[in-house]
Image 1 (cartoon, rainbow, N blue to C red):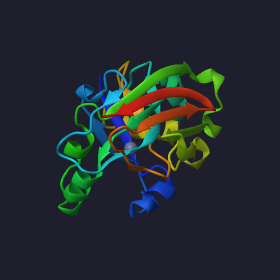
Image 2: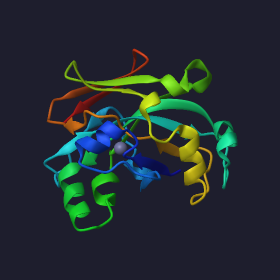
Image 3: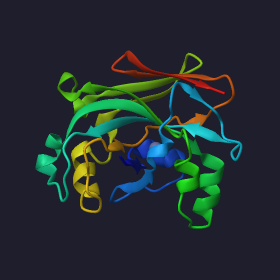
Image 4: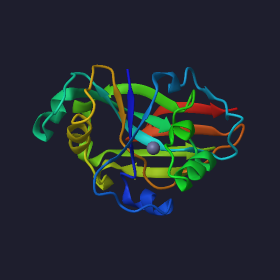
Length: 201
Ligand code: ZN
């Protein structure tokens, strides 16, 4: 199983990090060992600035390569929410040197994945999702603001990587990313329903 992530897919988030709006999707990956087990996230010792990034996650249900945009909807049946934990200090340092981001993005526990839900039950082009940190709303996103749609992403990614059943795609974060501190509680909501509950340690 692989985890493919899209960067800068919401323009207001790209702007908050000082990045340009991309012309094609920005792609990075996390290893399968990045998936957080349980609900406790331990801040790694190598970072003083770990950020949450709430994202809609697609679960690939049918493999393929060179998937056409028109057929992309046949390759996933379920969606959910996840958190792409990012060691922002490490990422900024690597970015400034033009180096790959993996250390900042792929560490153990950096991919939080909640339950998955049948996509038929949602309007995927107008999907509201939000993150509360210690009961304060810090991110409030809607898939209508994505630069690249789920179908665009699947078509683009599958030109390079064969998609397999069980692969996960993190589809980018809206604005409002920020630092986590010990004892924070993160709660994620999909269309108003709580689907994730994470404790920071
Ligand atoms: Zn992200």
